[in-house]
Length: 205
Length: 103
Length: 272
Image (cartoon, rainbow over all chains, first blue to last red; front, side, top):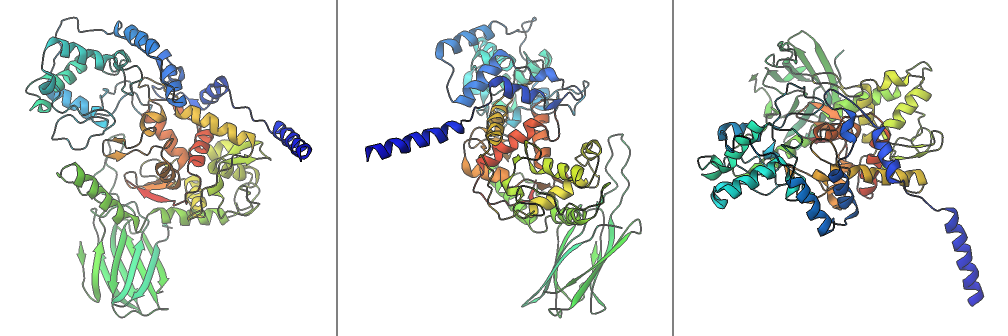
């Protein structure tokens, strides 16, 4: 009986050995992706070159292995140092304009032009003004943002930093880097800030 | 030659149920193209459904009807195995007629 | 509009306007569900399928033959159930092909058409007639309606396509740092009021995502295919232009298809 089992095991090993599958390497996968896109309009191929954080966070989500705490904190600290605060020290613009920016979802697509005024598309993921029921849930609700947190300087500075580059506070956040990636201008971010932190904004009423 | 209609006609206890899907752009004449010019109006203006040589439905449509219009209605007196005929005419004078057998 | 009553017992005319409402969140999504149910009867995709069937059976190209002898993996001339078992490996091409790739392969090799000409403008624009490729694909998927998805993973190239597709799914890039997984990797997410299926981690979501494309998109008044859907995702992710029938497109469709194995095809469907 034992001899029979041994021969069977050997036979199975031989068969399995012939059919070994080798998964594509990271380089092969990346190369396949780069060969599958064309530049079009304002969307050039350099958009496929990953940043350090894009690569780290892609790996983390794909493998399910979180970035180790020390590494995460070090990277977040590095990003925090790159945030550009407004030179004139004024953080809040016009909340009505901020609402328009939050509603607009255009900009930076190959179907847009370089003349397109970029929107923030905040409502795609967040609730903001209570009157707008057509909002997403990918990000937390921002209803009553200022009312809940107060309007003090630390809150204002944190909020600016979050919009400028969210990775300073949450390394693998899915939110775009509105300041760092040049999506919104400083003036536009001030208007969005007002939408969140002006006591008269519908968000805080 | 405009694309054919898809017609389903079935005899029900309370009459013949007719469902027809028409292939037509139904352009309202109020849209502008990417260059800013008005896209000319182009829509079905009349629909006639006939059974045994007589009209059972007459319709006059306008630009409020959506692209690829779907029409559903019932009429009494139709019999399984007999044919209905549907004709539409649009504002350009183009026309399409299709027939279906009542099932 | 005037309608003569005559012998009509009841008439219903569908206007195709969405019900705008100022209701609270819950009933807004309920109204959208009702709108979708109304639309499901009389799907204009039927018109596109009819044209696709006619094109399929017409002799075309330099070789003046129809597509009826095309081999989609179930044997020459077998179209029924073909879409449901693709993408798959084809020995004659030595590559994994999705339905649209194989369709073009047959148009070129069976019918003698020029590949560049066939693939130049695969998608119809606003107000334009559906392209031949869209109509043929619509017919092709209609012939798999009700048939369980069965995308194979037996050939090493099929497995590699899945793995590369999975890699691409999670690849964050572009100025917005979006990957497919940003929207489609978490259960219960919604962008504005559009529910987002978790294609990677939720079986019912993954099933529905794959089995309901191609679809007639009411907002565009046109039938759209899976190749189009991926291209348009990447456009909104701020990526460059995904090439029609590119390796990544086939890899991603393989990933999506395998994740939906077992679910019954229900396309062409109708969507907002």
